[in-house]
Length: 174
Length: 283
Image 1 (cartoon, each protein chain N blue to C red):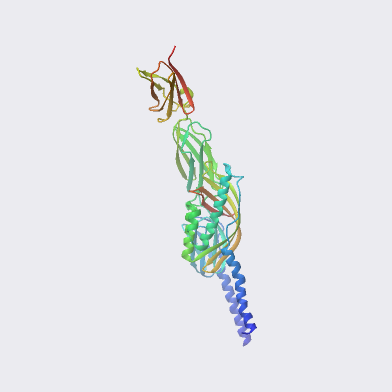
Image 2 (cartoon, each protein chain N blue to C red; image 1 turned 45 degrees about the vertical axis):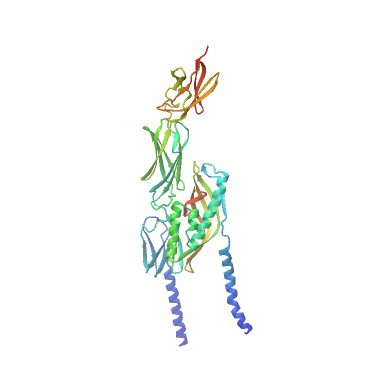
């Protein structure tokens, strides 16, 4: 085989590798989002240290679960981390996506979270989250939407059997 | 000839590009409300995807308007409209409050305590979206004809209040209301600990081998009868030692049979409250 032919053959392979490897890395990487939580503004009750740590851990897990559920159209990550209205809504979203052959890839660039309400009996907490998220919506393998945005979320978490679960997660325009 | 082909090809490419551009033109409303119909204007034809927080809507369209019914547009939040290789982000607000998630704590509380009852109300529209617009929420706690009412404006979808318990025991109705919706919870207000001045006992009977002591009706400091079943402890101390009887309040008072003694001191207590002391016999 002539060197020129080999070169021509190698070019697309190199091109595919250069695009595919970072993509594969991204998919396989631990996509645990970075969550910075502040509890100083929580009212009417002060958030205990142990509760703060648990909320940070479980809110992080919820976003990780949401991302996995929307990317793979699976419900288990939702059941593990969400309850109530949030679980109903995201379950419906996953079902709709699955039915229409869509999926959503979310690249989570981090959350700045402020606890704004902690109920007097310690059973519910409301969070105000400014999240930076890259979103790609895919129809089969084709990207039909792509954006990177700072999105404002309100989340209500309530204590469940062994963890805090997200009961409400709603985005709002600034 | 070659020039003509070139011109025709250029025209075809331009036409195709223009057609593509037209297909991508989407006009989405900026003030959509969950539960209300919405119209999207779309040029060209193709498939329109509306991807919301809790649902996805797919519509085939030809040039003109795409109508989305109120019952279809359920989720508030950030939506994406995608068609013909183009996409746009738009926002949907929650509707009016039509559901309250009301947490009233505790379910049972002693009377006459400061800031002991808490009420937390989360506001939702009919599609379970958190209503973020500030909304007045009225909290009303009523028992036995007296009521305490307080209006609180919600912030970020939540309103909360604290209240004292009333001085009268009974089932208090705790109502949270916003717009045309209200939710009722019952907070059982029970008598507090017995009042020291109301815990009085007397000798109710005596025989050769026992002394019967009984209390007067046991009341808390607000005059509410302490519930039946509450433990009252009678202690008798004499030369042979100490006898203790735990008796439950029955029909408002407690009684106990203690060993007969010619010289004994009997005390009565309920929880941390001490009543009077009786001296039997002696010189």
